[in-house]
Each structure stands twice: as structure tokens, then as C-alpha cells.
Length: 478
Image 1 (spheres, rainbow, N blue to C red):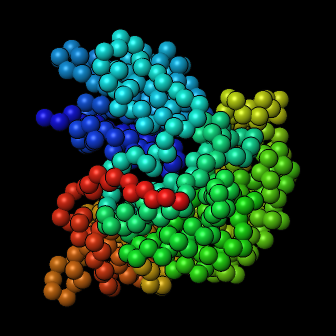
Image 2: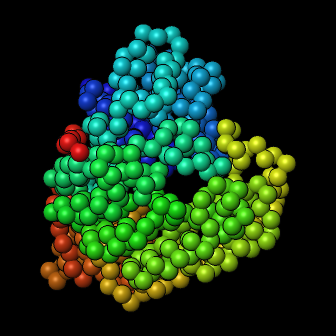
Image 3: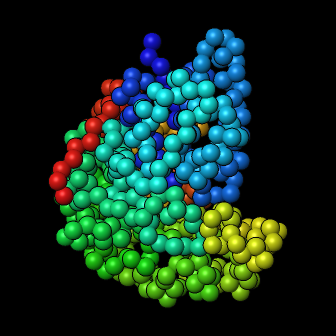
């Protein structure tokens, strides 16, 4: 019987992308996906280092895995434990010291070495730790195993050249490197041939794509080229940087029908003083001008953002400025974070200026209340409109409903098709349906019954088989 693996992914979409590549490598070795930890022969933790509790989550999980490994060994079995990703890159030797029952530790730059590291671990008495300082192989050049048929992550660049004082990513992912545009287009074409209808382009800073390439390929050009691929229904990207967002990119979004009208634009703070201390290299005036221009060219676009509360030295006046900007923009959704110091970042050294925890908590509560109300209002604006929904899955809490996403990335729940000859045909994840929004909530909207259903190849494939097949990348010259 084939050995089984389970991957737990912490953190951002780039980690989701890398986990798909790790799954592809494991399946190329003959492993098959496990449905739970209990049936897994190998557990891989793809870690994040961005937030303070990332360490606690990792070591808590490793403690549970140790107990499972001990029970397996007592019964004559085994469990292989692998730790990869950003926290592994930062603290690889520490992980091995604190959790010597781990078998393999690898970092952000050498995922390609996973098969060789597993082979070494078979005969090693101590954890096999291998960390390298520069990227050896683009993860996108590795085989991938997708969890869903209709959607795929496509990395267009890795690393980051920014120097935000709160962020540890550049030191863990390295300087920015872009893939040739031909490789990206060829990968997306291969995915579409494999029934994918929605692609999300990934980069730590997607809109600075191509600055390091000969010929100066730019992000707007990439959007237009990928948008020409026949069979691709939806194209998304994340995350852009306000400093690098250009009129050219907005125009490409407006001119390319498959690019979804959704822009995730991290603000972080509404105070110029705090932005300056964060080294964010844009100011509120520039940000608001970008929002205004977006709404001129893309009037139906959904806007989402990231916000940090309690950055060192943040005053009540600074925080009030953030509330003012958030109120002025009216985001569809905002991801809010309490500042947490990460060792090795400049902001972590500002200990004397740390905002008291109780003050941060109170500000966070006020900001959360505002963004939740804005999210409810955004969903309320959809009520009465007919929306195209990409079906993602049956509801996890209600067997009578399915969940889908609008082109603006709003989560919508709608009734499962009723039985009877007059009802629309049954649908599955990957199908595109049209339904009218009837009710708004804070985190989602509710729709009435589907008024029309378009069965995509992804939806048909989802009904026929439980999981997508292994995808080998198709590479082309740039």
C-alpha cells in the first residue's frame, strides 16, 4: 500500500503555492494524500514567520505529532515529520534542537531538495537540516498537486526588494526574481488545458514584476498576455504595492475581461508619520488618489486591504488618521493585525516605543468594528443584483447550500439545486452559476436559487473524480 502524506500550510498564498509543489514532489515519489493525521505516514508543516504566534503554533503542533510518533513506534510503525517554509528558514537549527523528533527541516529556497532530504533521513539518527541562502529552482518548475480542479496559484516572482521595517519576508525569501513572461503564460495555458478556469498570480509585490528581466516585461503586459488564453474564466493577482501601482496596470485590468474587478491594496496605516516609520514609500494622498482612479476605471471593483494596529510609536492621533482613511475608502474587506515584533526586523528594536497591549487591544476592537460594518455594507450593496458565482464547495455547515465567489471575491452561499424537472441541473465546484443576492451579512451574502448554470470542464471533472491529477509544468522560453 502506498505511503500517505498530509500537508498543513500556515500563512500566505505563496505558502499555499509551495505546498502544492511539495505535494507534487511527494506524489512523484509514490505517496498519496491522506485525509487525516491519523492515517498519514508523513506530515509536512509548511510554516509562516510573519506573526508572533507562528512559533507557538508550530511547536504546539510538533508536540502533538511527537505523541503520535511515539505511539506509532510503540506499535511497530513510523511517522515522518517534515518542517519547511519561512519559520524553518529563519530558525531551522532551533527547530531541530527544540524538536529532535523532527526528521527533515528545509527552508524557502530548497524545496526542490525534499526527495533527497527524505532519503537521507531514512538512515539519520538526528534531524536532517538543510538551509540555503539563495533560490536554487523556482518552485513553479516543480510538479504540483492541486487540491481543487478549478483554481490554481501561479507564482510570477519570488522574493522582495522592499524594506518595510515590520516585515521579515525579504530576509527569508531573498531579493525579488521574476519568471520570464513566456514561462508564466505557458504554465497558465497548461493549467487551463487541465480544466483550471481561475488563476491567481502570486508575488510578494506582483506589480513590480519584470524589473529584473531583459526586455523589461511589465505586469500590465503580463495581465494582457495571460488574459488572452482561451478557456480562462477568471484571473486574479495578489499582492500589489501602492507605490508601484500604475495607470497602465489599471487600464490593463479595465481592458482585459477575465481580470476580476477586485484589488487587494495593503494600506497598513492611515498616518503618514507611521507609514514613514514603516518605510512604506507612499503616503495617504498617493493611496487615496489610487483608490479614486481605480473607481473611475473600475467602478464595480471590490477593494480590500491589510491594516496594522499598534505599530511602535503609534499615537492616538495616528490611529485616528487610520480610522479616517478606512472610513473614507469604504473597503469591502480588511485584514487587521495587531503589531507583533519579529526578531531581525528594524521595528523589533523599537522596544521603548511599543504600544501597551491593552491600548492595542482597544484600538483593534474599534478598527474591527468599523471594517466589519463596511463589509456588511459592501454585501448589502449586492442585494438585488444578479451575480456570477464560481462554485467552490458544498457548505461545510449546511448540506442544503453551496458556497461560491463573485468576480469581486465576495463569499456567497446559495441553495443547492432542488430536485424536479424545472430546477437547474445540479452543479459542482468549478461551475459558474448566476443567482440574485437576497440578503447581506458581515462575512458573506446569501443568494436565491441559481437562475442559470454553466457547466465548465472543471465542474464536470469534479463530478467524475474526487481530486485533480498531478500537473507537470510546461515551460517555455521567455
